[in-house]
Amino acid sequence: MSTPADDRAPERLRTTPSWLLTRLADHAAHLAREAFTAAGAGRYHYALLVALVEGGPASQAALGRRCGIDRSDVVAALNELVARGHAERRPDPADRRRNVVTVTPAGREQAERTGKALDEVQERLLAPLDPEDRRRFTELLTHLLRHHAPGRF
Amino acid sequence: MSTPADDRAPERLRTTPSWLLTRLADHAAHLAREAFTAAGAGRYHYALLVALVEGGPASQAALGRRCGIDRSDVVAALNELVARGHAERRPDPADRRRNVVTVTPAGREQAERTGKALDEVQERLLAPLDPEDRRRFTELLTHLLRHHAPGRF
DNA sequence: GACCAACGTTGGTTGCACCAACATAGCCAT
DNA sequence: ATGGCTATGTTGGTGCAACCAACGTTGGTC
Picture (cartoon, each protein chain N blue to C red):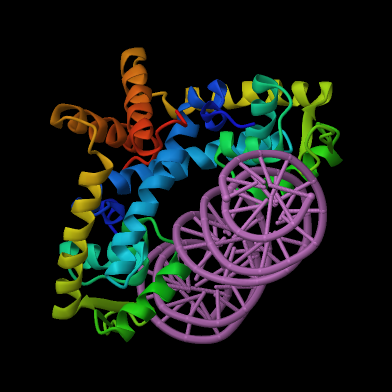
């Protein structure tokens, strides 16, 4: 038979930060994906759009570096963005190795819409935390990331 | 040309907790996988072993619930554990739907060894945090998880 | 005895991260 | 200037973790 406590995770796992982290991130990703797929996109698409809106036109390699996405994955996501009319890709006249990628108005709109949906996700994710703890949590995450990926954060 | 700041993530992403969380978890998973593969195992294998060591013999379904692993994935991981002599699986005489899974001495040893390697990973992961912040970080993660998966934590 | 729920198992799908290789094009030293 | 190194976009493929659907078997329940 299965008591409710049957579902309880082993102490050894419950006290391992990396395990908690992975578990929570999985849950967060699940929430975020709801928002993304509702907007007809994926994480990559949103990241790329945001990078373009914020930093202006850029090459695919630069976009990949900024968002932490592999060059090859940028290609695929960008293909879909272009197909949906959210971005444009044309060769860079100044450096014929590169493409210049730009956001379209529709892309900006999409980024903003998805951003709002994502804000609601944050709200749901951090629901049990008071403002002070939310700030601390974000701060700790940033601190850790800055240590492990210096220059990127 | 590409300045160093070229690699910097967009502000909109850097201030989104779920994004930071996913990013950091990815890094943590990377570190953890080093430790796991060095021990010749995967995350699932370790979780299952720990659950067995801590909670004693159990059915596959119960193990899956405790570790947050799908029934079908438990089967695969368990096959490998059995093949390596780290666990044993035999039909439950009391309920012929179930299997009773037990750890072998080799399995306990493996769990302990992997656990030590995983401890070093935590050390590396939380390196930039002082003890107080480490405690707070773990506490926040636990708090959030308890909210989103009540009963499991 | 009939129905529904749980179990183990098979097989397949998805998203994300990553790597190798290639052709083209720019850069820089000698 | 030329030769060698690096960057870029692209293709194709790998691995892992999470998940879902279906099936046959078995237990429990009404």
